[in-house]
Image: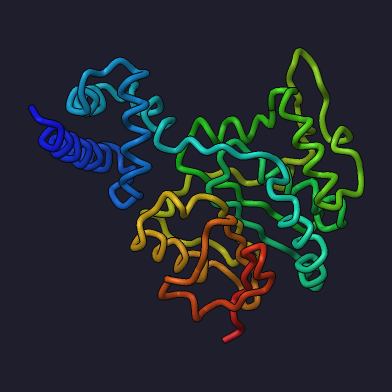
Length: 278
């Protein structure tokens, strides 16, 4: 089979695999950016020992034990605590003064992955005296990721970067105040999770919940196609209180969304937007 024909067959196999994943388990990756999906599935095929995507589909349909393994490749995200320190500095200096005016707060971390962003919020809010009045909603479609986030355990070698990010973000304490180190791992204080709700939630198929003062969804939309990006942004708009805030990743934007008129730029350079009051 020549290369263009093989590529065409592979694309058909991938579409059928994604349809099977949705029909069998209700995980919908059909509108994710195809280049990203193809790259991740190729890696899964190679490392899990499948000869073709059709073989992967057959195993997925008939043996549910393959689901978490394949999801691990489709949802893998590399994150870090206080990633992009100037973003967190902007929250601390520009957003927190507005949040102080609320008697209670709800913060949604959408696509929380392994929890690095959640703990960044929890620590920042503790340092700013907002933790006690806040409920954090940490959501992801990957159950393994949610379990990792709830455990709050990270390799000690990552802590040097986390610590430097925290310092550069305007941290008011030492990051080491929030974890204990043992056996090459850092275990974050369970008190940081006392106001956290961990939940399985899909930006593709699920509805909005509650009324939030801040929604943070960073470096997730880049994996969606334009239609799915628009759905997610509409979900955030519907979830935010008037004058609530939305934080996106450095390579993400509302520019092409039909919901862009619902927002105004608040901290332009850090991709922090504010829901319009009307």
